[in-house]
Length: 112
Image (cartoon, rainbow, N blue to C red; front, top):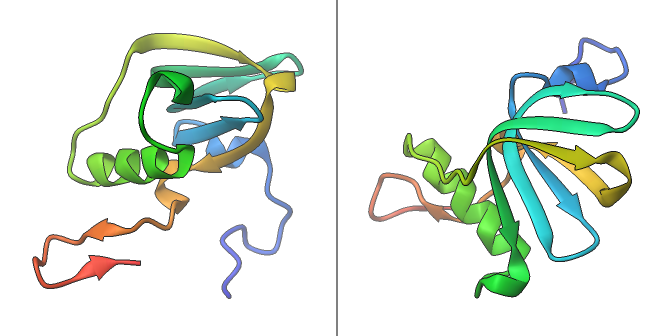
């Protein structure tokens, strides 16, 4: 598999100005553009804060749907800016690194 970082160790700087998914151990999920971070946490712009306890989808389904929505040129946002405590986060990934299931634009094919 090709190395996207040119042989160097990845850092959080690689995610700046990209749409990211911040996952927590609890029901909250954050999707937004990472604009800054420090030892306390992460700043996201144009963010979607999702509480799985208030919805009917799993986190994975919600991330999958957000990815497909983003690919279509739309997105869900309910915060202009949000700060997320670093201690609340168990993983960070780029939204465009999500491997999604869903329509590809070709009605006879699906992504897997």
